[in-house]
Image (cartoon, rainbow, N blue to C red; front, side, top):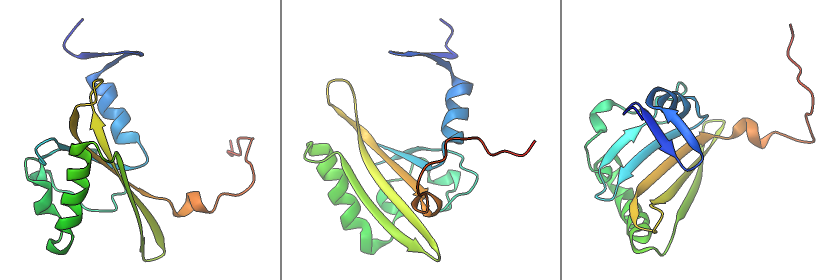
Length: 139
């Protein structure tokens, strides 16, 4: 197959499709490798936390306030050792509720590859009640 196609266990996608999918997700995603270096973040249109391309290649500890670096290190150490796989936080930002989750990323053999941060504004999600089973678009 062409180098432009990525083969997965459950199908294949082009590099352009992978990029578009990651940029379409309703969340900010940042990937930090197994040496604590920021390798990637998606282009999310409504960013909660501003990101500059210049952070790619930086140590993740340099991108957090000094007072929280010990928490960052605790999460990374727990992921690297295999003690934990998820860390979750939520904060109020004005009238918005922000949900921040960190996930250990591992290969098929369980080897630690890095950490994925997923940040999402869940304000509207928290307001959902009952069911919505019909499409209510206006033509």
